[in-house]
Amino acid sequence: MQEILKTTIIGLFFGTFGTTIGGIIGVITKRHSKKFLSFVLAFASGLMMAIICFDLIPEALEISNLISSIFGILLGIVMMIFCDKLVEKKFRVKETDITKSNTLLKTGIIVSIGLAIHNFPEGLAIGSGFGASIKLGLSLAIAICLHDIPEGISMAIPMRNGGMKKGKVIFLVVMSGITTGIGAFVGDIIGGISEKVIAICLSFAAGAMLYIISRRINSRSK
View 1: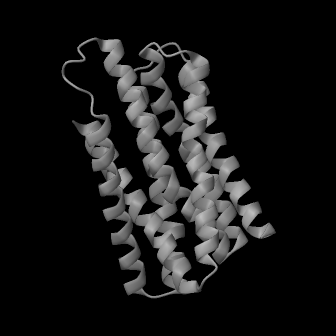
View 2: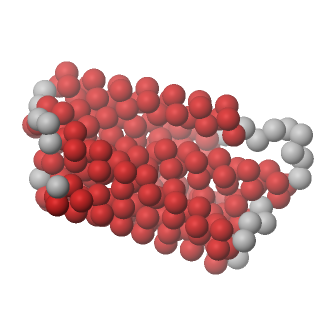
């Protein structure tokens, strides 16, 4: 139980720390250009791709087999598609909301909800990573923390430009990172069942992250 609690705290700390730092940067920076936002999101995507290619998938293949890894990746992609469709349906910005500040504010809230959902598989990767090895768990936690900084920026910018108070922006940014700790808790528990389950969890996180990256690149290219 102590190990599970320790893993949860680590996931919670690194998840909230990265998004909080990004949120603070997004709030205090006076000018925000599309080029700057595109750069930080591209940096986050590149870092996440490195996690997928050099940590998650190789580790999943090492401790299990190709079929389990493919199953986990596909499951992660399908789950993220479902979550994205649900968020878009429930919190879509309506065309009747014509004021720029109102649209920006709603966009920021939608982004924060989406990132809160997306942070869960990141926490799952940390929890199942610790199930595989301490080194993998720590490396994933640090990499995900760095990756969450630009995500926090992308969340804070539209909410702040939409007129939301700084304190509330930071609060929502911190709350979105809590799901990383929840994911780490779940990943450590179910990862303790068997090595095959750990492999599926790692590949599930990889699939979810792949979908997030592809969706982000697609949205920035429009």
